[in-house]
Length: 67
Image (cartoon, rainbow, N blue to C red; front, top):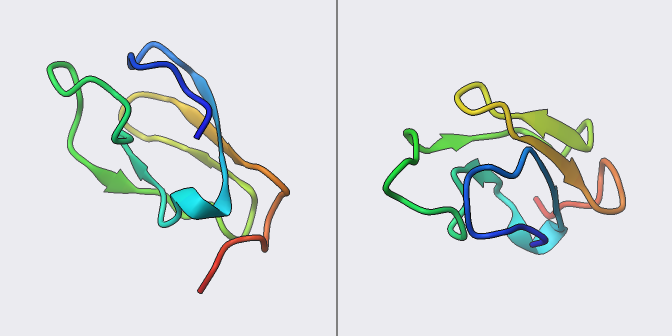
């Protein structure tokens, strides 16, 4: 996963190894994290967190995840 260690990152690229995708990610600091929410990224290749607005993009695009 390509991200910094704070929640200020607004654009994060993830890979199939990061699925199922949830926000906050394990790399984000917990002191200012919101409740964990799973994000459906497999079909579209993009997902937006409804809590913090972080935009996730799936490297390789939609359909690269495992089932």
